[in-house]
Length: 128
Image (cartoon, rainbow, N blue to C red; front, side):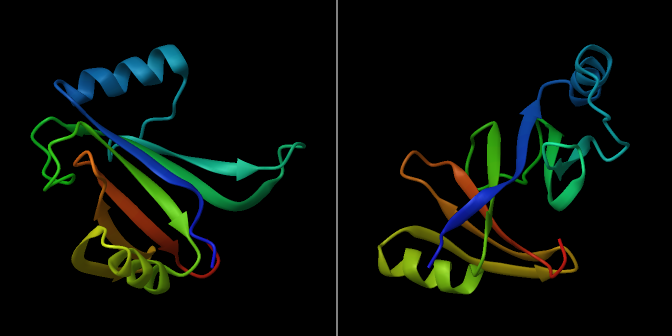
């Protein structure tokens, strides 16, 4: 079984999220959207789209999205079979959070790494 197949997103907190979003937009040219982030579509060497997107998001410092971790970041990893991976991680003694979300964007689960960082696992919906 494959475990992680790629990075689906990088999320971090900022003391002044709107100002930092504006800085990234102005100075690095990231197309920051009203939701506070951007989506980078994957392309091949010729610039043609291929299946996949990596999300990038700046959250306000007060965000509870990374709880129970108090880290200032969270990485979302793409996986092929979320339920199988969650089962294996539990068997291996990992701190897997009980909640599994199934949405229009795919399936999501979370595990806490040994340093207390919340890691998001994502099985994209068909066609993503």
